[in-house]
Length: 164
Image (cartoon, rainbow, N blue to C red; front, side, top):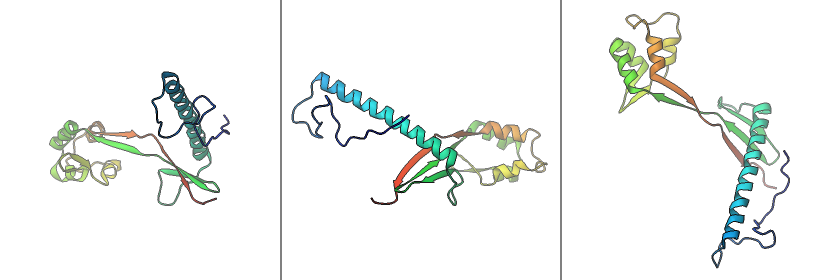
């Protein structure tokens, strides 16, 4: 893929530039042409995003204190790709877990707020070889049923770092 053409003004019929505020209503053909051009630009942007994402994934470095990001530097721009994840807590499963655990153990896994929130260090409690005394035999399975970690779409950010 090669994206070389960049135009300053959008043209509908390739002869007259589109003004930001039109004095008269556009006709159906003009609306269709504008919508078609928008679709073309969006497709081109998707292609550019894909190319930049591949470059950053393949050749980027991890910035300081940003383990879930990768970055490439250009002369005028820095391109950062950030990976995120969302944690979903299943309340019903957590409540089952709470009924099965001693109070001290459950409070090390979850904090009661309006809804359950994963405690920092919860995965470390389960990562050890032996489970804390009094924990149910299937604690890890119950915890896995209660907590779902979902990957988010990487966020691509392009910033100008130097004026031309």
